[in-house]
Length: 186
Image 1 (cartoon, rainbow, N blue to C red):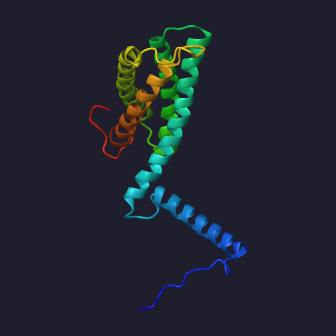
Image 2: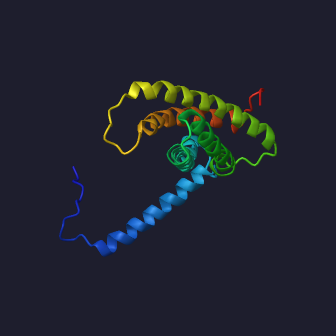
Image 3: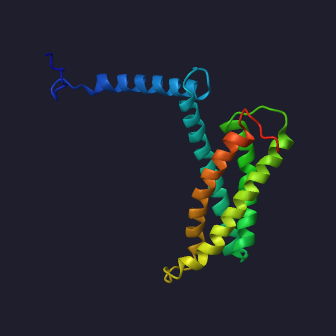
């Protein structure tokens, strides 16, 4: 039986292993990008993973827009929570459409108005889910943080709604809006 040769601490050289690590990392990143762009056939799972990573990046940006506008409207302009949620959600959805269509799923089809109306329909359902979570989540959250300078409960409940909406949106965008098989209602 041949024993594998282990690298000992004496013959380890950071100057030799760092360039090798960088080369391997660069090779893997290029390969991962080719898989994600569909240039290497037979690895559909990795293409979905690549799209999911892009979707998460877009989602984080949209979440920042959503939370930023929500807090601006409530804290600075003293709006009620539900109308502020509708406005902030709508702005994030509009931004999301363009980034999701052209960057995440790289959809170059010309039926933009049809897709946008389907996208809006999916997001209106998402807004309804978000509003229900906030409406029923706020009273359920209670007054657990009375020492805060202002009420942050709506942000905590909004985080829960964001995770639910992310799952709903990715599945709907991937298989209904930007999928190869278009739904007959869109």
